[in-house]
Image (tube, rainbow, N blue to C red; front, side, top):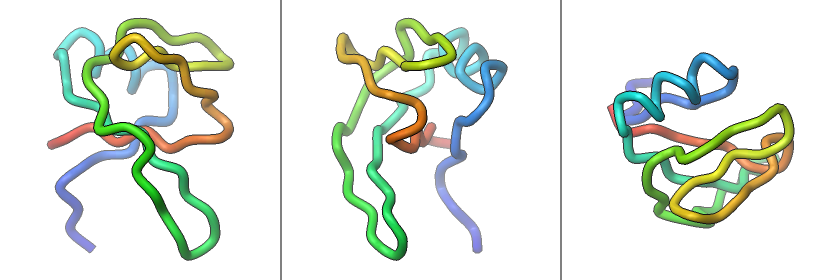
Length: 69
């Protein structure tokens, strides 16, 4: 499947997205359903627990982060 986004998972993914100022959207994915939570913005900060996108923090283990290609 050809996606127009890449899923950010590891610290290096978030670091590169922050440096490149990629637009990152926040999604909630469960089983066969997915919902966009925030159309997002740039990665402002990240830790092992959460990601800060456009002034809001999201838990890494709860949400999926997608950067536009």
